[in-house]
Length: 110
Image (cartoon, rainbow, N blue to C red):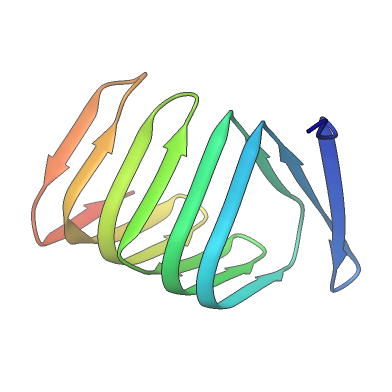
């Protein structure tokens, strides 16, 4: 199947750009509000219960998040991203490309 390189979805009057070969979003509730959200990569998988994106405030509550292209694995229960302040509560976080490995219950990144 031929897939468009660029998919633009307007939600709440804002643009969401999704560039990649494969984008999957599975969850009970997905909210995207605020500024532009850019997702660039070959394969993006979002499997979780609740994903909220409001401006700079991003809440991700779920079991498993896979982002391939730069290879980012996030297995956490709760992620809060507010500007530069990032709260990650989970067991295992892998970020490859910049080589960041984090394992712990509570991780704060500012």
